[in-house]
Length: 119
Figure 1 (spheres, rainbow, N blue to C red):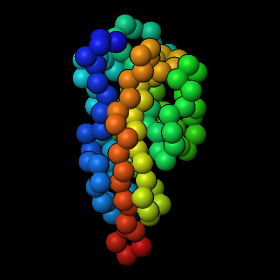
Figure 2 (cartoon, one colour):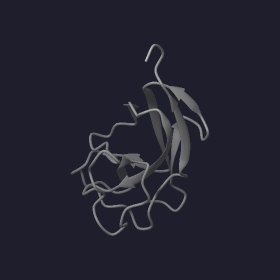
Figure 3 (cartoon, rainbow, N blue to C red):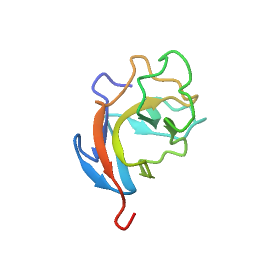
Figure 4 (cartoon, one colour):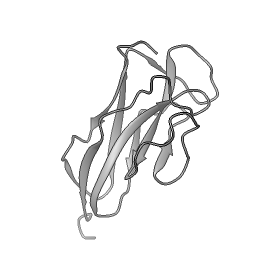
């Protein structure tokens, strides 16, 4: 990836308070998005880390409820997190879900989820 490439969370903003389920929108500048399994220079796909620290950056990114993979090239997703405070961080992976070298990660943000209306 180019040295100027950046991955970031477009929405929600750091410190945002949301009610119920919400959409997270993911961005990448100076690089391209390609699905998992597609080897193409200067591309990768998003992974969203929820309430966890960065994984081992030399191994494939885990795939579980705290490490969401967007291997089809998605740039947004709906999250339904339990009420409370949560951290979100993006990490770009290559065609094999391994972080780039050097790794491309967003700033870690915090969101507060309130119960859905009537919930």
